[in-house]
Image (tube, rainbow, N blue to C red; front, side, top):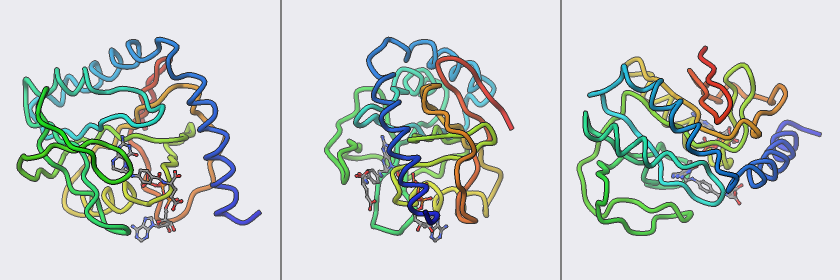
Length: 185
Ligand SMILES: Nc1nc2c(c(=O)[nH]1)N(C=O)[C@@H](CNc1ccc(C(=O)N[C@@H](CCC(=O)O)C(=O)O)cc1)CN2
Ligand SMILES: Nc1ncnc2c1ncn2[C@@H]1O[C@H](COP(=O)(O)OP(=O)(O)OP(=O)(O)O)[C@@H](O)[C@H]1O
């Protein structure tokens, strides 16, 4: 198997484990851990995400953080381009975006200092696999070239994989928060 095939296999296996974990009432425990990790970051610009498919739900954490500072969500501009981020507020007007994730209809563009990052699989060293678009890799590379940027993976513990195959363009996570544990690197 070449690297792309190994990644595809790891993605498929983790996707199945994520689907299993979804809907088991695990989100609350993970949200509490995420809120604890984010407490010192109150007031900084934070990106979250609107969950799609069987992703864990960060929305209650985003709503709490929005009381202290700007919160935004990713918007796809084009294939093979970094993500942009648009201001999000609890209850703001949303419309379907590419790939099914809803995006705010209006709101200013924001460059986040801290990113809550969706993922398909993670490993114990901060390695991450997404859906394969390279969007977060490109985005983190760009943000990190400008200033220190904190990337926090948010996932079910079941999404852990053993030693993910990583490429030079894969941007590492600074922390991982799950329903069962928090890892910081
Ligand atoms: N909730 C959420 N919002 C998000 C992301 C995310 O991962 N989660 N994104 C994070 O980037 C962006 C959306 N990116 C996505 C990229 C690809 C696919 C997707 O369906 N990919 C195909 C495979 C495509 C290919 O291999 O060429 C698939 O999974 O079937 C979905 C979302 C922006 N918003
Ligand atoms: N900074 C970058 N510059 C150019 N190409 C990149 C960059 N980051 C990733 N890529 C390319 O994008 C493609 C998809 O990358 P990868 O499989 O790592 O995506 P992913 O991490 O699963 O997706 P995402 O980051 O959207 O969640 C790969 O071919 C990779 O080489």
